[in-house]
Length: 209
Image 1: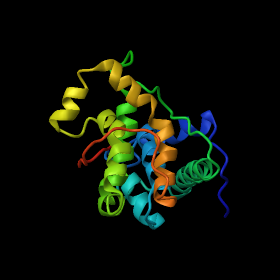
Image 2 (image 1 turned 90 degrees about the vertical axis):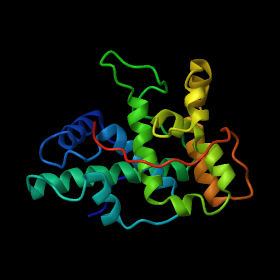
Image 3 (image 1 turned 45 degrees about the vertical axis):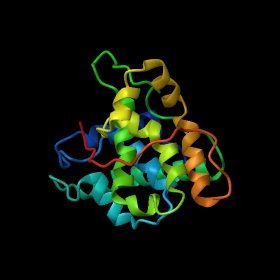
Image 4 (image 1 turned 120 degrees about the vertical axis):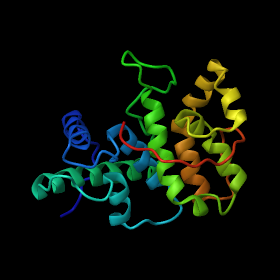
C-alpha cells in the first residue's frame, strides 16, 4: 500500500490525537503535538532509522488493547504525516507547526510548543551521536531554541535566557526556519545555517502529557 504525502486533514489529526491519548496505547506514547515534533526531527535526521524502531518510540512499543484494523489505520496516518514533512523539507517549503510559536501558557495552562519541542528532542536523544558527530557547534547553535522551548536542560545559561521573555519569543519564532537550516546543514555542510545561537546538548525523555 502506497502512503500519500498529502497533509493530514483536521479530521484526521483529531482522529489520530484521540487515539494517541486513549487507553488503547501505552500512557508513554506521544500525543499528536509531540509526534509532529518527533517526525520533524526524524525527517531532518542525518541517519536512517528503520520504521519499526521509530514507530516503537512513538507508540511506546506495544498497544494496550489490540485492534489491528484501527491500529494500522493510525499507523498509516503517522506514515502519511512523516511523508508530508519530508516532502516539505525536500522542496524547501515552510513547515507549519501545530501550535503557536510562544512559550506563554494557553487558557488550559499548557505550552504546546514545549510539548512539540520535547517530541523533537526525543528523536535527537535516541541518535545523539550522529546528530553531533560533525559540525557539532553549528548543530548545537541551531538547536538552542528547541532546547529552550523543551525545558529539558538544567543548564544555567538556558535558565537565564528563560528570564528574558522577549528574547525567548524571538528564538521561538526562528524554529520553522531552523528546521530547514538543520535539514540543509546535514546535506550541504558547506552552507552555514542562517539562524540560531550557541547552545549545549541536552538529554531527557518526552512522552504523552
